[in-house]
Length: 378
Ligand SMILES: Cc1cc2nc3c(=O)[nH]c(=O)nc-3n(C[C@H](O)[C@H](O)[C@H](O)COP(=O)(O)OP(=O)(O)OC[C@H]3O[C@@H](n4cnc5c(N)ncnc54)[C@H](O)[C@@H]3O)c2cc1C
Picture (tube, protein in one colour):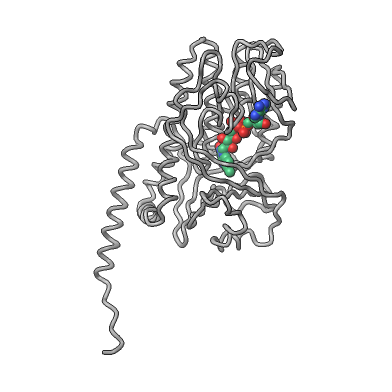
C-alpha cells in the first residue's frame, strides 16, 4: 500500500480522522482487524458538540435512526436534578448505526477501507505512508510501537451495556447513582433505550446493579432486552505526548476520559479535525497543543464526577445543593458542552462548593433543632 495517510483502526476515531484528512485532499487508507458492523460497549450518547463536529465532517444523522437528547438528569435515591443543554440538542444513536454512517461518508470521499486487516507492526514493508495514525483504541499497539506510553495520569473502571425494546420515556440522558456504580439510560432510537452500568467492581453486572434502582426497573417493566451484554474497560488516561515523528495517535489510543462524561466520541471527532489541520500544515506540535486543550474540560468534568462516585456523602451533599440551586447544574452542564464556557469552570465548581457548604450548614442546623427523642423510661 502506498498512501499519504495510513490509519490503524477503523472505529469512530479512525474513520473521522480519515474523513477529515480526505477533506484536506490527502490520499487515505484505513486498516481494521475487524469487519463491520463493529459493535462496542458504549452508552451511545452524543453530546451537542459532537453533532457540530460531525456536521463539519459531512456526516448527518437521520432522525429516524436516532433520538434527540435535550439534557441530563441525575437521580440519587429520592433526589433528582436535571438541566437542559444550553444550545443545541445531543443525539442518542446505536453504535453500529453511527459506525455505518461514518463508513458511508469515508467511502463516498474515496477513503480506501481494508477490513479484516490486523496491523502487526510499523516496520512493515507493505505500507509506505507519509503519516501513520494510531486509532486502535484503548489498548493501542501503535502507542506502544511509537514509544508514546508515558502517562500523566491513569485510572480505570468497567462498563457493560444492553439495549431494551421500549419507547424512551424521556429526552434526557438519565444517570442513576448507586452505592458502587452508576447506571445510565440513553434513548438510542424511537423505540429503544441503551442501559450502561459503570463501576469499579469487575464482578458487578447490569442485572445486579438494577436491583438498586427499583424505579428504573419498574420503568423497564416487561420490556425485552434485545441483545446480550457487552463489556469494556473505561479508562481515564492522559498521555504526555500524542505524536512522535510521523506517527500520531487519536481517539482512545491517544488518551481518554471516563465514560460517565459521555465525551469519548465527541473528543475523537474534534481531534480528527485538529489532526487534519496539523497534517495540512505539517506541524504536529499544533496537534499536540489542540489535543491537550480539547481534553482539558472533559477531563476536569470526569474528575469531578469520579469524586462523586467515590464518596456517597459528598454526592448526597452535592445533590442537595444542586436541587436547591438548579442554576449551578445548568452552568456545569453548559461548561461541559460549550467550549466557550470552559473559563467559567472554576467559578461554577466553586459555586457548587459554596452551595454544598450552605447545604451542610442547613442540615447540621436542622439536626441541632430536632427535639431529642423522649426516653421511654420517663
Ligand atoms: C461502557 C462505555 C460507555 C461509553 N459511553 C459513551 C457515550 O455514551 N458517549 C461517548 O461519546 N463515548 C462513550 N464511551 C467512549 C467511546 O466508546 C470511545 O471513546 C470510542 O469508542 C473511541 O473510539 P476509537 O475509535 O478511539 O476506539 P474503538 O472504538 O475501540 O476502535 C478501535 C478500532 O481499532 C481496531 N484495531 C485495534 N487494534 C488493531 C490493529 N492492530 N490493527 C487493525 N485494527 C485494529 C479495532 O478493531 C477497532 O475497530 C463509552 C465507553 C465505554 C467503555
